[in-house]
Length: 292
Image (cartoon, rainbow, N blue to C red; front, top):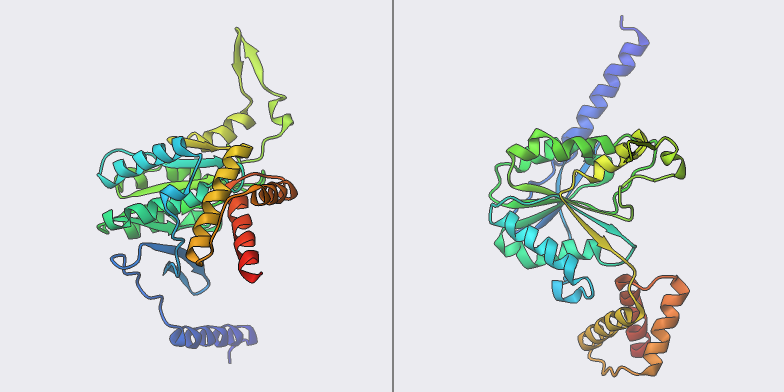
């Protein structure tokens, strides 16, 4: 006679088997028709899930970040041409176009074979598995890690660190990582990190804590920095988005002092002048004008 615990384990296994038998296996992504997917993992397995809807943002919609745009565009064209290219870290102030820039590149180059796979921080351990699955596909894949940052006690950053310099990327020429973060080094930086910095023979030697934090971001070959907009830049972006939304909804729009003042009050209330703030204001202003 089975021990009650063994019987319970057998019952659990049978219940799991039956549940899995009625759960459909994830459909394979048709990369020819689907330019973007999300890597999803769970108790029932992991795989690519086609991205349901994509932002239609274009590179021309992203204003006042021309230098950043030019650098990542060049890097992406090198990648698509099968030439050496770098993993990219886009870091800086919130709402300044980091994520939008990556999506705009996909919209520009999807027909040239560029594909995007969003990978969350919690799935970084799966990077080798993801790369193996993509290695033989006839496309160029950007693994996109959005809003990436790690706390001091979060060891998962080591998965990304080893992936960036590991052999899997060196043997797979069709995969790069583009990551965005509000933190320059992806990890929190404290004043106490500098307590063990020393000067030897006139040279500054960082503490081990500082070196460890810098070593992660150093593995990205290309750094792009993003900063809050000046007032004139912010107002230019507001004008662009209000005009675009107004035209889409058949609304006559004329830039005037009323719109300018309202846009500045909107940014002041949120404490930041950025492209995201400008878009949010444009939705508010056009929606209100149509409702009136």
